[in-house]
Amino acid sequence: MSASTVEARLRERLAQLAPTQIEIIDESAKHAGHAGSGGGAHFRLLIVSPRFSGLNTLARHRLVTEAVGELMHGEIHALSIKARTPEEV
Image (tube, rainbow, N blue to C red; front, side):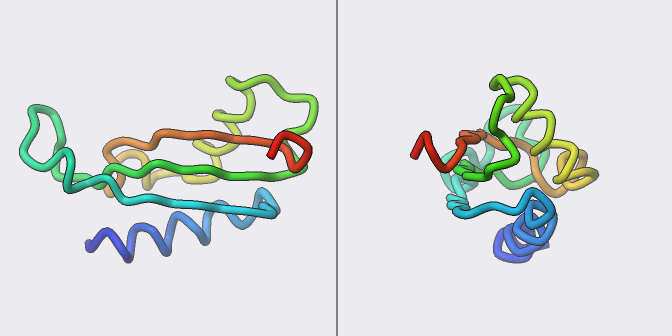
């Protein structure tokens, strides 16, 4: 599956968090061929959502990884997450 297709699926999954902003950067080219890459895509994510209000970093990351679901077990090898509230941007 191409990185652009994975990115589109990622955006679909993250929509359930009612984001006011999403930035997804494909960093796969930086990691091509490294040990353990598994052939999956590497992404950096900035997501802004009021759903993160009152949650610590770990709880925010859990919400994101739950939303992403099985993509984290195949198409996505690595996902760097910055999860912010609208007030933190």
